[in-house]
Image (cartoon, rainbow over all chains, first blue to last red; front, side, top):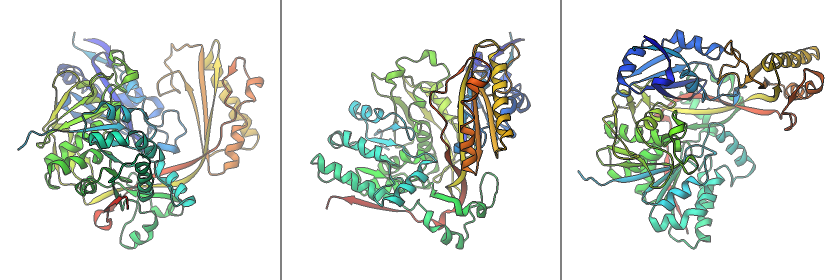
Length: 106
Length: 454
């Protein structure tokens, strides 16, 4: 086993859905998707994002695209024009997600 | 079944997108339709206010300026335009467009306008008929905000757009319609798809979803940014769709950017909730079945997406006044920049507290520490400059104004090397908050009219 950054094996995009954000993580290879998808638990992601995600995290699988979709609830300081924070649209969340450490087979 | 291909380009992904992109698409040619999105959540309340002041305002004026630039080419090349630029006053926008046509000596221009999405003045009536307007995110009661509502619009679907095209419109002006409907409308018109043909409606909705944010499917916001050639000249997306619903996403020859599996799959997941149930007014789409494959250079083909019958509700987007906010920032330089920035924040909040001020909400961010979690930097973190960003929100505008006066003094009365305040005191902004709700479709009547030169 070896530790890599998620960006070594996947790409991502994020955006806003009201007060929540979503991040799609797409793996370059089917084998990495299968091996890593269970490592990306909602608990681990919540810890990685620190105080940013105030609500729960929901995880969806899209095996047809070798992809996972995460909903980060209440992660935008209220969202839209109510929010006081710099990234009120979750544009950075995908890049932040890719900085997670994951294990792959050597 | 014919193999005729219809080409639909999207030249504007959001309110504030490139004003050159739609012109380039029209000049590049080889397209049948041009779709453009002019509305953000906050736009509707601004347009309602403009219309209150002036009954001939309340639409996207940028759109009229664009049409002034491209109308002769649109007519010559037979490119039809579909835009939500009507805002809350499509009839006034249509009048302005007719003036543009007159200026260019173009006769016979037909403008299709769609009305019925704006329900601001019928809220009481709709409540009497059973609409609750309860917040669909958190269940909160509408009576809490009813007297502060600034705009109320229903997200309508593709059918009225198709109808306007059936009636011969060269330009279709809508208010609030879903973004994918701008592309789905012309497909229904061209191929005569039935509104219960959920497979085809799902394919068209998927195509519209992928292209609705303009260059975000052609290399914009792309994870492997270092692979992109000519970001400056990035091409905007073109859908090539057949009667069967199979489609290719591509871009015009000679443009920058990229269309490949990565760019398309990233955008497929953009703003996605439950991928098994993507709800639009026309169809509920299941994205977990879609197959995509590369089909030559800068071409991606999509197949096999399925849809089911839509729900009995439309989504309503209401906006309401929710107080004031302001945010200001300072650049903190030198060794131990983060420690210093933390101290600067403490000083400012303490001074406001001693002056007797507290706020409904505050925020303190250290930009440059981490992409989004500025409060929890990595342990080994060291950098020579941090942007400290402070913000407050409150119903009382005077309190927000007081906050904005407390940022600059720390430059000369705090730790050394603080700068970046050339912009002056931050101005309090009105907060127009968003309230999503559902409404039974049976309560909403949309209609389509053709406006032309008399």
